Length: 181
Image (cartoon, rainbow, N blue to C red):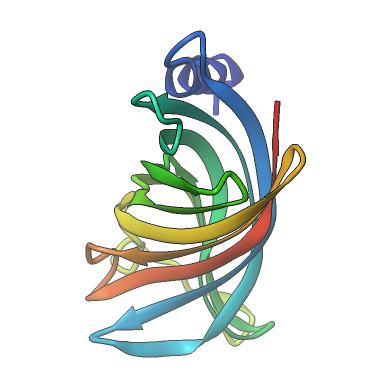
């Protein structure tokens, strides 16, 4: 993917106002694929990394608009020979509520665009034109965290709202940290 396109996209998403607070975030992620509420195979361990911005809404400073750009991995895994890994660029958008300036709750949506996919069965490439995951996903996210100096320690749960492949929906739990500038 063209680096100048990514940089332009990042600046557009993050550059909302001159008073915005910026940061980076990263952590562990456990992903699953579900079909009609039933988990397919096992969880896929992975990671996420991204950048974000927060803008205060109102005069009290307790409500914030958050947005960003994030790379993540979704899918499922039975073992090293049987798995589906989907790489996404996501744009988390939502509201964050501060609680006594020590903790926060957040929620919103994360439009996600597929940038790669790997599907293996019995150690062989099983990805075909007919079983590829769609290029777009739309999960909602809810989360909570605590603030420690310039860091946030956070947990977010994401659940896909749309079918990405034969009735399958992504869901994943993120546990990580953010550094605010």
